[in-house]
Image (cartoon, rainbow, N blue to C red; front, side):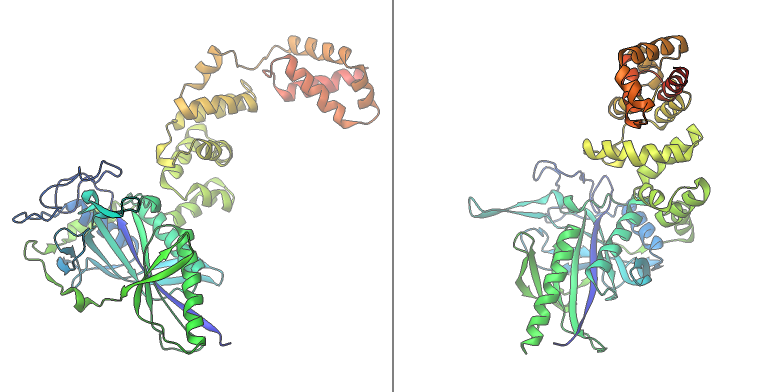
Length: 478
């Protein structure tokens, strides 16, 4: 069988994190009761007129600049005409002729080193409503809350060659956009979704094969499976001497297969023309500069800085910089406590563990950096041991209590009375003659038993290091 190469380009739709829609003042809040965030504009009522949301332009511009795009300083909106129940106007306001950004790129880290995926364009548009298919009643309902939610569509060139490259590209996009706070990029809520354009060709060929498009894939796993299955399907067709049709296909992730939806449309099928109700957008030098100055330090640069400035391992730095809210909380804690390595240990251990256990996202973290830094200080000074610190931190994670006050109130401060510790150690040694004998005969596990018994007798409030030192001293005297 011939060897084939997969050619992949993506159209990524991202809902922008604005409080109101792109052309009206309706809320964009996710999860509201169906058809409660609607008005005459976003439901396409006759006589209603759109008014452009300035924040949409600024967020689109910020993303475009972060993706190294050129900017059309003079851009405009066009009407994309099609007829579908979730499209109340029977057209979508988008950008075809003069998109806000074009000719950019994203650098991704692949198995073969760094690779540049070119961005053909980035344009602004409005989202459609959402069709809800009720199989029980055999009907479809429409929720127009999403109609008019602002989108950017990022169209890549066909530069990717595998599902792995696609996933890295999408992850890089997501992290960049999240750092800009332009979108939360929650695939499960549809605020980031991808259309995959895919074709195959014999290895060594320079001509593109016939491409298909798979629409609105909203999980990385679904995207990977869809790419692998469609690649296999097209190769099988070519090997059988059949033709790959240019079409739009729907991926069913439960069945792990796709089916044909319709023949693939071209721009001419949508009968684009400039929107007569919206004036062109002019982006001045001052506006460009203001957006540029507001750009954050992005994940790649921040990771490199954490490694050099704080001496963090590359793996820790990568995990801590994946989300901007986590990165900022870590750095605040590191600065306050003055020990970045110990702060990183807490974040890589307890913070991530509790985030998973309580299903919290980084932006939902309620604890203050000051309180975690204080807890780290208390442990370093011997006021509490590590196990007690972990117990207190779980309370801080949930309720953000002041750690020293909480420890005092609940009697959790470490016992620092060496006389009491010495008396307890002597008591444990008298009560455990066999363990003492075993230790003297070279059984190291017995020493751990004696430490544990001493800690248990003191209610876990003593410093384990002090107990070990006291035990070794007493055992050497016997």
